[in-house]
Structure formats: structure tokens, C-alpha cells
Length: 318
Image 1: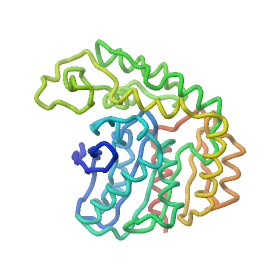
Image 2: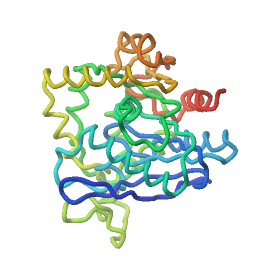
Image 3: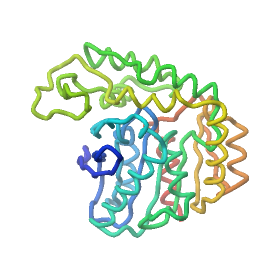
Image 4: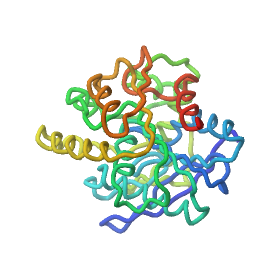
């Protein structure tokens, strides 16, 4: 399989509901499920290389599911941007897992989360009251922890939602690279592939502002716009030092309650996950195993063999 299949899950919200898109690799009838959730401005196709590696390692007998978190990719955009927050994203993941479990009972559940996706994973793995169809067996946190560096949050908040229109895919890739140099070295082919799903032809975006893809519109060759709702930045910019400190207290409590075997990946030059936080995560809660990648900041993209190989080895180790 060289391309995943696209599916949708209906999710509830105060404005009447929305659809969350997700990409499926592997065997839909497999009882072993790996859910991979992306970072703040990214989308589910970030995990293509990892998903293919997992399917090969499992001999095909695994179901790898990579959602586009609401407001991104092929998912709907919310009417109320206040819904672009971790607790609501976690609720959407519960709806997705319930649907997967109805389609094929889940016997083994693993979770991989990059940045924002890792925060969602900590909520799911650390809150024992949530109705998961199966406990999270193994958890991978990619360059994220309960404590986030305030300067890094300000850096990220400065560019989220500021994207423009690009005449070509090459222009879009160049603009995205200027914001993503912390991802570390990539070949031109790797970056082109990572960028391909980060934009959409503007002709395919509905004029009503919903962000839904208009399948009847001619895709054309451009101009291109970013794939995500600029309003995802609204809750991020509302954070204060006080609310950030409160959120950190909650996230540490969730982390300390995690029982899943945990792997923590960190870009050695990351400005979001501080070294002291990473070390603390190896000493408390699930006592994560820490793997660092030199020459990489926030966040490892998992398209390089040593990065996705570390995850594959962890998920399939005895």
C-alpha cells in the first residue's frame, strides 16, 4: 500500500457537530491499532513513513490510524474557535476510537503523538475515567512534555494563522521551510513530501468559510492556501502566564498517572521540551525512555529512518 484510505468520524460540539478526517494504513480488520496524532499546524499525512514502516514490521496485521485534528487537513473547521483546545481534541479521539472499536474490536492500542498530539495522548493515557475501548499499551511522546517553554510558545504563536497564498507548491514549500528550520536537515524530496499535504488549492475551499473541501471544484494548480483554519491560533494567544502554569500542573498530574510503557523522543536542540523536563519525565510517572536526535529542534518529523525506526522498535519490542 503506497497511499492510505480516507475516512471520517462524526464528533459532537456545541454548534451542532463536525467531522474529523482520518487516514488509514494497513489492515482494517486487524485488532492491533496504532493511532498517530500530529502537531499544532500539521496533519495526519505527516506519519506516512512511520505508518508504512509499522505495516511492514507487522507483516500487514496492524491498523494505523492518523487523524487530521479538527480544523486541519480534510477535517471540518469549527464555527467557534474556542473548541480548538486539548480537552475537545481528546473528546474527538474518543469518538474515533469508539468508531474503530465498533468496526473491529481493538485488542491492543498504541499511541504516537507529536507535540500537540502528545498532549492529547497524555490526556487519554493519564485519565483513567475515560471510556477507552482498550488501555493504551505503549505511548510515544514526540518532543513534548507536561511543561512547555514559554518562549517557544510565543515563537509558535507568532506564526500560527499567518500563512498566505502561494502561487505554486514550490513557493509553499519554501515558505513553510522558513518557519520549520528547527525540524532539522531534510532532503529536498523529504521536504517536498512533507509540504505536499500542508496546502490545498484555494479553489477547493468552500466560500462559506467552513474550510470543508469542495469536491466539485476544479483543483487547478494554484494558488494554494494553508490546509488549516487560521482560528486555531485564537485559544493559543489567549494563554496567560497564570493559565499556562495551571495547565502545566494538570498535565503533570496526568503524566504521573500514566501506566503505559512510554518512549520520549526529543530534538536535542528543541526549544519547546526543555532538557530538565525531559529528564524529569524519565524519573517520574511512567519513567519514559528518552531518545534524543542531534541536529534537530522542535520537532523530529519522523520521516528519517533513525527517527521512525526508534518508534517501530519500541512498539514491536517484547
